[in-house]
Image 1 (cartoon, rainbow, N blue to C red):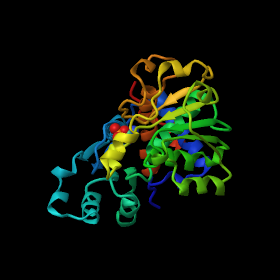
Image 2: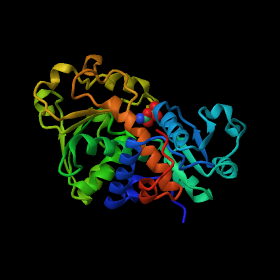
Image 3: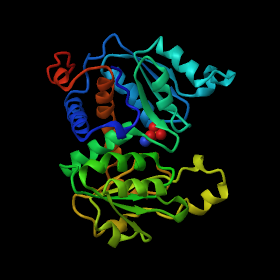
Image 4: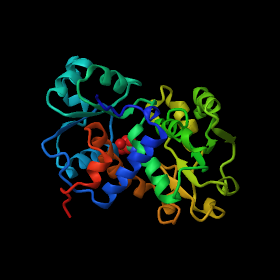
Length: 314
Ligand code: CP
């Protein structure tokens, strides 16, 4: 059986907790030879810093070798090669393919044609499941639980694939979501319907101030995604609507953490960075451990294998 990692919706509560436990093992000991002899491909048809480099680091730290491209303009895509042909070719070289693509559903399609496992590193405005796993890991690590939390999602909730993935995964854990977005970038109806169908509580706020933030366990900021707008005037209108400033944290719960998938543009003021609530840099670091767990999941390495692993390099 082939283990893809294409959507977070496929994962049961038990499987999520299992992968988080595996990530915990990798945080204790990230350097191992569990993937020695394997080749991992990273195909990025859209720009990336964190996702690409942390997947490559995860593969390297587990002893695999990495091939791929970070700019599709240097690949034969520019000559008209189809996604199917690219995926079939690379399947002959690599044991697992990690891919980011601008088309929603591209990773699902690739998983249907590829003989090797596919890892979705983001497909358009649709899903970003590896980001979701590292977000869950970050929430679990800082809050001690995933259950019964108040999670505030701020910014671009229309195009933000990370918030769509987080809602999908959190359905197992009885959250209350709070949506704060300009009306042009409001949470799409399909995700509100998803919440209703899965008994996920949600509240919509117009204001973004210290009194609203006071209720948060997690304040999840997002960037307004310029690259998704066909009308740049509309981007200019909405890009600065919600900016987190340090003085807005004065009533925040002591253990509230500010998360952001990054990159940020200006939605979090830079003087927030050394506030104890700021967690986005550590969040990105957690991506390494989550992505080591994802490669193991795809390549048939179990939690038991990781716990009994004798290949740790100190
Ligand atoms: N969070 C995230 O996906 O960042 P990159 O676009 O830099 O990979």
